[in-house]
Image (cartoon, rainbow, N blue to C red; front, side, top):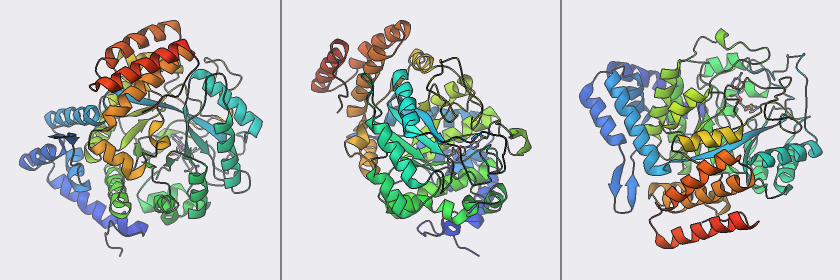
Length: 485
Ligand code: SAM
């Protein structure tokens, strides 16, 4: 039987079933052990240092105890600490992005995804480079600067060369004052060599959802195709890091397996990356299974309610305080509102989950034929931006970090010393100003410029405050764009 070793490169050793089961047993036994729970909460809380703040994070066992605890007053404390951590390291900024579906050709058979190979009635579509250009122009016209590209797995229709060509096209489009400054990539597990090519193409984060950490369920849910191989999929992030990509994004598709099992596996995966590569995941996504073409989410037994979902999110925040957390438009406005306070740092907005879903459609129209799943939050980007500001969040279109070489452990150490606040806050305000001037409705612009005035005053360093204010004036009065610290 495989033995638990976070430093191993073998999937079943760093995501070890026996260790997860023992963790769940330990969590169950200690879920009302108040002295232990108090000590875990104390460990999770941000501590002040001479340079800012630091946070110890939690081990998968500690975090699992909090997740198992069913005392409402402890849940409230977890939520308070999650918000404290979020404000300490990410401030009130929320980074905005949109997905761009390139192709729904797929040779896999994931039972929760309508792109599975046996689905013969869904139209198959792959964007040409001209269509990619049109999609990017439409996305730039909405105000987006950061994309996550999505594609099915199909070595014939969507080989790595196709993905690389699309990335090149995306970065080449400069429509009016727009450009896409960061392309994150969500494609199937691949080879070190291909990860190296993606790195060379200038991608931001490589995102790959584990779907489930439970090996048997994984194999049952992916009955055929290359994705069936649990070890190849689970070890993908190690190959990505070997290929030079140091910002990787993890995720579980909640609803497929028991959430406590998934949660322990997810935190163990983060611990593994830290142990082997010296840097944890850049982001963690928390998608839930949604209705889609021939997919009924109710056939999966492990669906979770909104309260449990919120608690999972908050416990992730406590366990990995420096990792960004992403919530997509799979979730409703209400759920997103709640999660924003519990540690989420990135949201998508105005999203289309179909291939070619942006160009040629008004904000009210949405094509469903090639859609991957139903979008619950169907508001326009302008509405999402206004909603964020009205709830006290600064929508940020910033992409500065990776363009300034602040990736991997350099990003993490900036985050850990609280230094990120010295550049992220003004960067958020400057990119928000670009959005307001170039794309916002008059109402959103009015709310935004009031917010910028108030937030500029909060920049402690006088010199930085002055430069940021001057740059924002330049954005208002000229076509100069893309200022960054
Ligand atoms: N094909 C790539 C792969 O195999 O990893 C990734 C791209 S896929 C377009 C992105 C993610 O969408 C999947 O990893 C899965 O978690 C999620 N997804 C698939 N079907 C879904 C559904 N019905 N509801 C919600 N999310 C879904």
